[in-house]
Amino acid sequence: MDQENHMPPAHRLYSSYIETGAGSEIARELWGQIPATMGEAYKKLVKIRAEYGDPSDEIEALKKMMKNYLRGLGLLTSEASENIDKLDKGAVEAGQQPYALGGSSLILNKIAYVKTLASLGDHGFTPLFFVADYDGIQAELLNTRVPSPSPRGLLMSYPTRPELEGSPIYELPNPPEDWLTKTLARLRSNYRGLLRDADPHLRERALLNLDHALSILKGAYYSTENVSDWATKTIGTLVNLEADLGIPILPFSMPGSRRLFQSGYELLLAEPNRTKFLEAANGAVSLVEASGHRAGIGYRDYDYVPFFLECPTKGCHKTRIELRYRKALGSSSAHIAGKCPKCGETHELSFDARKPDLSDIVENLSPRADSRQVIVNSVIPVLAHVGGPGETSYYSEVIPAARTLGLPFPVFLRYTRLFYNTPWNEIYARSLMSQGCCCLIDGGLFEALSGWVEARNTDDSKRLKEAHVAIRGCIEATAGMLEEILAGLRTEIEGIKRRLRNPGDRRTL
Image (tube, rainbow, N blue to C red):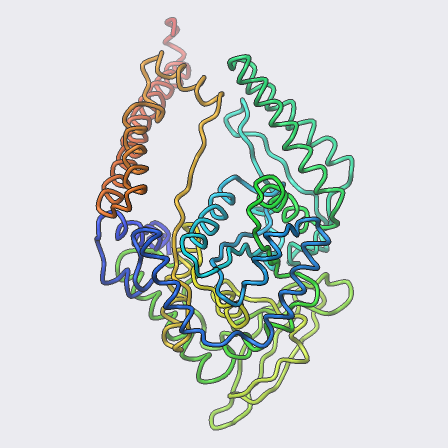
């Protein structure tokens, strides 16, 4: 297990193929045909839309629900409404869990990607942002750090209660008002400290931007009741009101929508689909591990069920229940069951193994990481999914499984993470360089970034690969030099400690 944990993650296979063409056979098996540019990707969207065929019966009802939801949050601009109307033409999707205080700016990278890709041609594709708020309450979603003078950053954490352990994040109510007041004050004080030595004009503009950002957080807080809607309102304000991008937003927890996706759950539960799906996904795991990499999800057991049940018992706050599948040899019936870890009640359902009917429990179902895309696709023809490193690893197991079932499936695109320079970064960089240390903010990195921009603008896939390699080289070389300096400092510190422990050595250190 320790050896497996030290393997590089599966998404490195994807990156290596994009940058150098290495491992092309494995990469194509795991992710299908990987486009090198947005132009290549867009050409695939038209073909994938044809594979879906006629729009689903449920999509018109979903459009109406999405408009009502976004109107309630004050995010239904005219362009967002028009894009919702075009969902049946095909969607270019990105998604994210609702992170504390809206999450990092990397989420905006994803949204910018789907907006740009969907708009490349005249086919009327819709950019779509999916809020994965079925995910359980966990530290990753409760905590966020922002830059601060402290090396660990400034930590802010949502308060929660023990009875919400194991519940989906949309069950967590907004924190008390005094928590918000104190948190906004801490953020304001923190950034004032970071900007203390910045150029006065830069500092003034940055503080004005800070006040505006805090007003967006505050406005979103007072117009929502739970942290999922708070994050959605925050992101939606930025992309639909501030930037006027017209992005349709679809949270899993949107009231009334679960029953619309019932056929997707049933498709994955029906035999032989269930068995084929888990066997193909496990085969992909074996392929990833055989290549010397670590799988994102891992092997599924023979009793795998492609969804969770949220406990309907009052007081359990929809605790997520792991279900198990059972079918007697030769029987036409199957059985799923699971025990709530909170109340201890066992929930079970029997059904026709080939034609399951989940009508009685669909309002309490939630997808798994490996089933969500297929379930969403059962209503919305998703043509492309834009994701980060974790999703890249997950999809390496999902795409081969969907292919085995002959299902239309979106092309997967790993987005480029953009990191932004800041006034305080420039101050720290100058300080490091004045002491003879290296840092990323130098001519080499900016030259490589310039090469990437030029290659992107000319749609030159070869130069794009070369630019990626150059950018990675700058980052890894800088990291290597800094690690050498750190190792030297640690050695020096250990030497000082040894001399301090030696009572016979009292020389001046």
